[in-house]
Amino acid sequence: MELVLKNVQKKHLPLISELAKTLKIELSEPVEDDNYYLKAMQEGRNTAMLSEQEKLDFISSLKAK
Image (cartoon, rainbow, N blue to C red):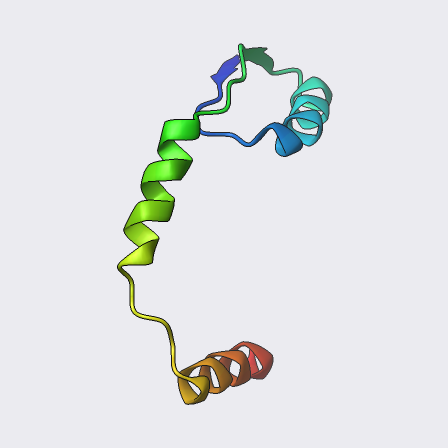
């Protein structure tokens, strides 16, 4: 089996490589796609931030699980 990595940050490559080796999966040229991350950051700039109450509600919902 071969796995092609796209949009992977360089800092995650060592862990992914070790997991693939353990699972006997071949990796093909892992690359970091800077344009993908830049586009995601630009899209995120236009996203409304959560209010403090929304943050607290979200954290509470996670703790309840």
